[in-house]
Amino acid sequence: MEARFVLLPGDGIGPEITAAARRVLQRVATRHGHTFEFDEKLLGGCAIDEFGDPLPQSTLAACRTADAILLGAVGGPKWDDPNAKTRPEAGLLALRKELGLFANLRPIKAHRQLLDASPLRRDLIEGVDILFFRELTGGIYFGESRLSEDGRRAESVMEYTTHEIERIVRLAASAARERRNKLTSVDKANVLEVSRLWRRTAARVMEDEYPEVDYEVVLVDAMAMHLISRPRDFDVVVTGNLFGDILTDEGSMLPGSLGMLPSASLGESQPGLYEPIHGSAPDIAGEDVANPLATIMAAAMALRHSLGLEAEAQSVERAVEVALNAGLRTRDIAGSGPSIGTTEMADAVVAAV
Ligand code: IPM
Ligand code: MG
Picture 1: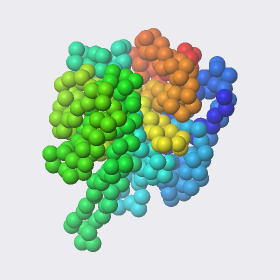
Picture 2: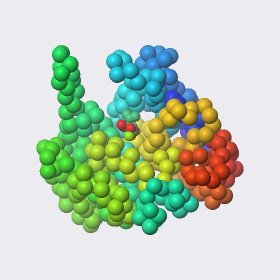
Picture 3: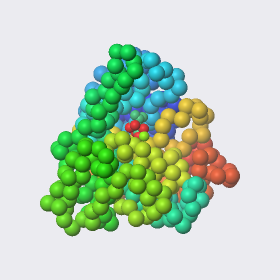
Picture 4: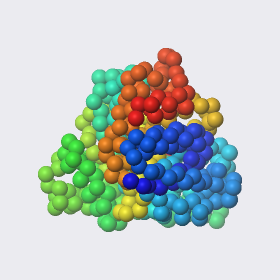
């Protein structure tokens, strides 16, 4: 098949890890007889520097017509001025909104080979396999937000409509049906009106449309605790934008390193956006030490969800396992053992595809 990827390397380690993923995709194309085209565009801090806009029109236009979008990471101290007119993160939020990418899938799965890299005890995390569905284009991220004239009062409104809740719950419930048939919805319904609407709406969807799925609700503060104390009990978890942001960072510690986790952001029809969960790590940018595996596995998710190439996606995931089984580790997952760089890790995965 022919497919066009838009690559958004972004800032910090972004260019290094997307270059690694691009090489893996290129290898997949050669092995399986596909033609992949790659179109690199600016997003985030680098786009502010070049165009004064974290999401330039040229980037948005290219993304709209892509088959899949692969993003590195955006942001860094250079653009951290709290008084700045715009920030790199605004580009990412605008891209999600413009493309209608309301569903953010974040799989949290412990790799057998890395159990000892986790700060948590091995017996707690062995076998963990959670798929988060984070609502991505609503909630407090996109509600009304303002600062009073005198600068002494600010507000950010958390807002959801039944339509927004229904569509993300449906996706999550459908995914649960294909997995271990369990869905957990996370809210703060004991305090927030918006969460009470979330809870009623989710319950109705589950009762009417997914009666066979094992369904439970958990308050977000309790979830923060259960995620650490009994992570194996969860299969699919669905929650709003802010709670999902926080819980998935927490969950990312289960497998040991943030450097191992990919994510997919999907909408009704637009191309999907694929990225590692981790940030731009400006402290190690340009040093060829960043772990490219999250981005490489994000590329695998793109093959699966946007191009329908399941066998190819699995070949990439298996290649990552081969590299790990061979004992290859980047610094973040090496513990006190020897480590290799970004390029060398990419070489190993490319060779194993
Ligand atoms: C994430 C990030 C973003 C978010 C930032 C960079 C805007 O933390 O994708 O989880 O909060 O959504
Ligand atoms: Mg986050």
